[in-house]
Amino acid sequence: MKLSDARVMLCNMQRDIISNTHTYLVQAVSGPNDQYGVSYDYRDQMAQATCTALLDTKNGHVYAVRRACSNQTVPCAEVCSSLGKTCFNSLRVYNPLTSLPWGDTGKLSARMVRYNGCGGSFCGPNFCCCRS
Image 1 (cartoon, rainbow, N blue to C red):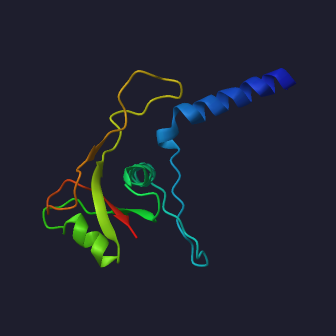
Image 2: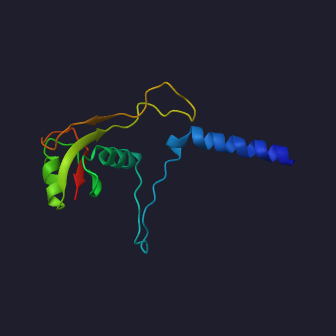
């Protein structure tokens, strides 16, 4: 195989991986000896980044805490309080409407709702913004 053919093949592989990221989502599962197990979800990243941006002070730790979507679930104020934290907002992070290939612009994809509060026992917020 020529070097130029190998480069083309590598570029094609990289393009396929990037354009099909929805099929290549990584989820690391902790093993029996793994004390640093991680569960990856892009919604966690979106919620954490949004909660951090919404924090109204310069100091403090920010936590995006998952909340079950149910009319039986306690409000975010109680979720944060149970962790010794204070709620300052809540979010609903949705699955993307579509998976866009890399470089595709001008189309809708990810979305979320900011509730501007921590109350309510309804299926709405799936993340609570907590701070210490």
